[in-house]
Image 1 (spheres, rainbow, N blue to C red):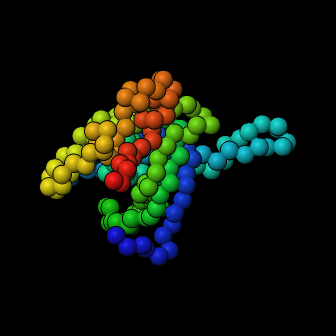
Image 2: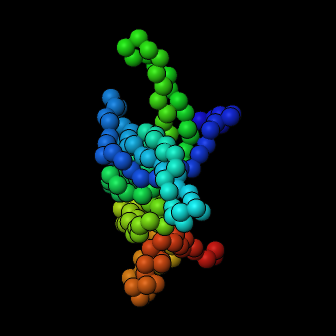
Image 3: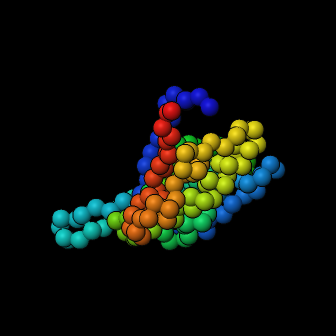
Length: 181
């Protein structure tokens, strides 16, 4: 996919204001959609209070792995930060020209200034199973080190690590190298 010129890339901070829904396409999983509102807040010096300003509403579209994560993680009312490409689609309804503003999301996450979140990463074993399956499908023999471990894998339990160390080790990819003889 090439790079487009003059894309309108934006980062919006707001709230999910609709249910997160997935639309099916003819060839498998489709995109996930949700509506979000971004509300301007400004400090009124005269009253000494924060007041609402303008509001911006947009439909957010998420594709592929991002769609899966958004569908599992977000729900109506959640505070979010969305980065993506802003665009307008024009159409005609009841004989009148209409337009709708949309955002194709490249990244979506919780707004941690207004909520807390705990990342849920895929288990290493699941990733290794997928990688082993890909290797087998490609007809590439599995590489093993002198210790018998597959290259690119690391078992925290085998390394004798404590729970905090094991959690850190699970996040890191350690490549087991063999000494050249």
